[in-house]
Image (cartoon, rainbow, N blue to C red; front, top):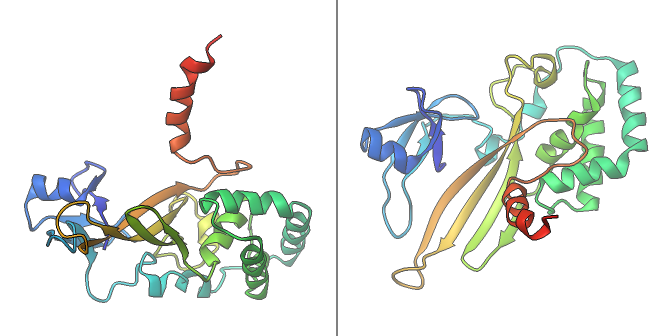
Length: 238
C-alpha cells in the first residue's frame, strides 16, 4: 500500500486522503512506479490510514518480493570494452561513488554493504551492459542492496528500501531509453507509527514513497536542505 498516487485526470501526484475527498471512497489512482491502476482503501483507525493498494497479481517493483526482479532481466546488448572502462572508473572513484550512494540512502548504507553490492553487480555482469554510464552506479547499487534500511524515531519504526522503475524489458533501458523510462528511483518506506492519540498500544501501518531523480551530481542533496537554507539566510546576512 502507498499513501499517494498519480491522478488520472491530470492533477499530478496527490495523497490518498486528497483522492478520497475529491472523488469519494471508490477513487482510483495510478501507481507512479509501475503506472498501473490502484484502488483506494479507506482508513480503519487505529491500525490503518487511507491508502492505495495494488490489485491482486501486481508485480510492481515497489512490492518487496519483486523489488529485485528488474536485475534478472537480460541486457539488450553487451559492450565489454565499456565494461572495462566503467570498472576502472569505479575503482578510481570508489569513495565518491560510495558517498553518493550513502547520501541517497539517508546515511544508512554501510561501507561493507556498498562493497557487497558492487561485487554483486559485477557478478551479474551489469558493468558490461551496453551504454552504462558511471553516474547510474550509485542508484543501481542502492537498489541492488539486499537488506532493508531500518530506522526508529520517537513514534515511527521504519523499514525502507529503494527500487527502480517497473515495466522495463531490459535493465539497460534505464539509460538507453531515457525518453521512455522514468529517470527516477523510489524510496519505499514501510512505517509503523505509534499513535499519539487513543490507546498507547495502537499502531498505524502505512507506506510512504519518495521519488529521487537520477543525476550526475557528485552527491545527493535532500529536499529538507532548501528549508534549512531559508532559515539560515537571515542569520548569515551581510
